[in-house]
Amino acid sequence: MKFVFKRNHIIITVLAALIAVAGYLNYVDKNAKNTIKPADTGIEETTTGNEENADKENTDKDDSAETGDEIISNDIDIKDEPGQAIIVNGTSELNFAISARLSREQLRANNKELLMSIIESDKATETERQQVIEQLILITQTAEKENAAETLLESKGYEGAVVTMTNGSVDVIVAGESLTDVQRAQIEDVVKRKTEVDANKITITTISD
Image (cartoon, rainbow, N blue to C red):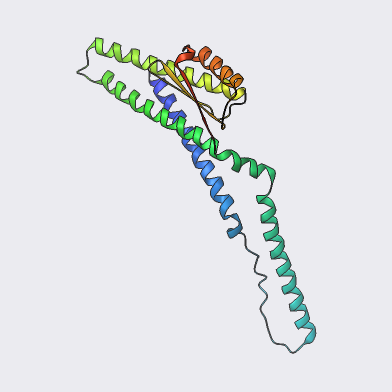
């Protein structure tokens, strides 16, 4: 039981870390242009009366200005890279899936913590402890079925799918404005096989940006 409990906390920690990384990448992307500034040449203007030195200083300043323009231009080019665009476009759906799964696991962790406190209580009878153990096993089995369904759905192209089992019913959330009959049938087939729940107890919902 303690192994299961620790495993759940690991899942929550990983999901929280992913959210933090996504938020950090978004923050860096928004502020990158502000943080990159042309380097100061360190040239101090002096009046020497020498025309040649004055021309050299002007040339150095022009070079510095061009260097600064190149730095800013490079910064803009970085933002327009295809890889960066993919991350930004997929952030919304990914964040939703992470948030939904994190909330689900946090609730499950709280329930497990409560059940574990009953098992460890001196006032609990052996019958009560056995009932709690059975509930913990059920929670673990439910989590495994949800994860199996989500993994298989993602392998079929339904990125960020969230499967939640509650009281014998299953709620499925997938990205997209709508689903074809073929897609709904495919999702139902996956969920039925992995959760062992009938199709009439499966609810499929779509989300879009």
